[in-house]
Image 1 (cartoon, one colour):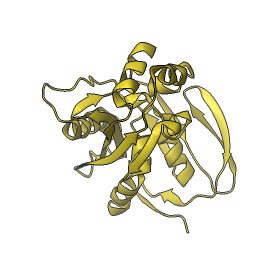
Image 2 (cartoon, one colour):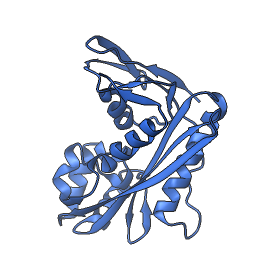
Image 3 (cartoon, one colour):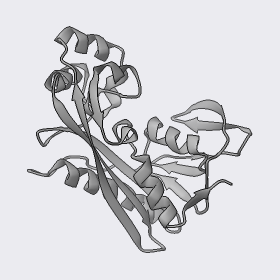
Image 4 (cartoon, one colour):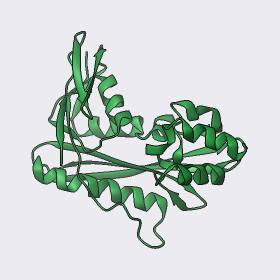
Length: 226
């Protein structure tokens, strides 16, 4: 397990370290952390969302088995994964509030996670070409000391345009799809694939912000920075 600190100070350039790289952002915070917060995710997109809101948090990621159970439905799988990602981190930081999430793409209840390689990524994209599918994220907010394990799932309907295999191959060659559920990033180059999107956009990116912020506010973990 590795860990790192990400902090924000309103109106001040703050250096943050993500996956041994660094970036500088000047932020006017929208929210502030009221309690110790740990994000159990290595996703730069999830980290970026919290950073942009002005939250101070620690990142600590646990290695878990992410294999679906036989016949497990996508919404049940992402909820289970979110809780399993949170549990070992709760033991390490018993007085902190842990945020964990898991996102999958599902096509007719078949779970499409991250691709194994470029060939798998092209195969996934061709399955999704011209098709309606769902992006589902499970989010867990937990605190050992407070005895809280709150979990919910959010679903977004997405429809892809139809495209030939050479388009999928060209997109995969950019490298963008290789670390993303369903082999595409709606917030990046993959936006051109999307014909329709109904529901939470941030959920498709990997973290349903409206639902998460309500959970954090309800438990007094964050407050508006005014």
